Amino acid sequence: MTVERAAELLSASQHAVALTGAGVSAESGIPTFRGEGGLWTKYDPVKVSSIESFLADPESYWKVSRERGRVALAAKPNPGHLALAELEAAGRLVAVITQNTDGLHQDSGSKRVIELHGSGRKVQCLDCGRLELRADVQARLGAEMPPRCRNCGGQRLKPTVVLFGEPMPVAAMHEALELARNADVILVVGSSLVVYPAAEVPLVALRAGARMIVVNAEPTPFDRFAQVVINGRSGEVLPQIAALISA
Ligand code: NAD
Ligand code: ZN
Image 1 (cartoon, helix red, strand yellow):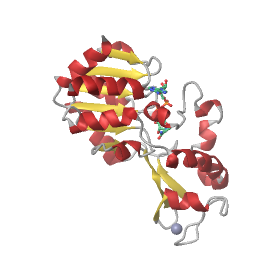
Image 2 (cartoon, protein in one colour; image 1 turned 45 degrees about the horizontal axis):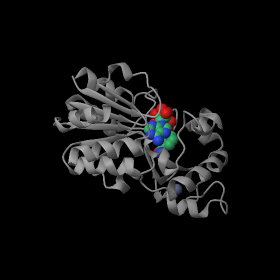
Image 3 (tube, rainbow, N blue to C red; image 1 turned 30 degrees about the horizontal axis):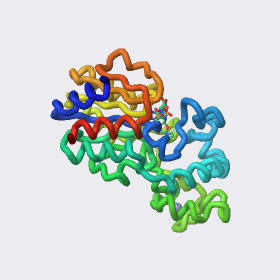
Image 4 (tube, rainbow, N blue to C red; image 1 turned 45 degrees about the vertical axis):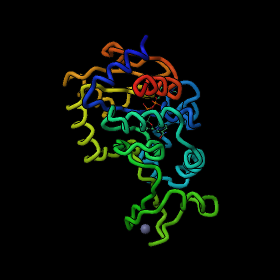
């Protein structure tokens, strides 16, 4: 059975690392970008999520972001996030590297979380640099569109997420690649593995000799390199794996 094999690999590991994508938060009610019901079936990603379009028209950006923020700020960790936190607490996982910006890994109790695409929980003024909580900015959207900086009055407040056309956070990418180089197991969860350089993480781990486990709703281009592929929902599969390990 694949769940048993995944539990065996993790139990025998010393430096297992997880890489998560939007799929791990789907069962918390946050839509993924790709796949069935994904946001990209509704929006043109480059139009709504690039730094060029943000700078040209912050109001249009915030109209879309307002709706997504409402959902993301209200979301709670699901059993998949909790199982990953449990695996870390049991010493079976060194860290979670995530492409997500929703903060749900931290909420679920995971201690070492590396955010490759930044965090949606904060907003920064591109004019004066001041940081604010997203929840505070969210509360005044509508009354202010686009929202204004409380410090300098500027109208270029941007969530601290990585938009298309922006560089990856250097320190996070460096830490992720270091973890990948030292990993003996790489557990990929809820990622289509088509977004680079995030998909570089499992490639580096594989090159360093790691075994790979993929838990995803649909096949990924990396499945042929994996010892275990489980096509299912992470909120159901990860708790089964964690339960076998703690048994
Ligand atoms: P993706 O949207 O490209 O792919 C998500 C994958 O998860 C798909 O292959 C889908 O089949 C799978 N999936 C859907 N539901 C699942 C479930 N319940 N269990 C397991 N798998 C499931 O996501 P991505 O590869 O992470 O790339 C999109 C980028 O957009 C991310 O890098 C991220 O920065 C951003 N994003 C973030 C969030 C978030 O923070 N929650 C949400 C959407 C997009
Ligand atoms: Zn400002």
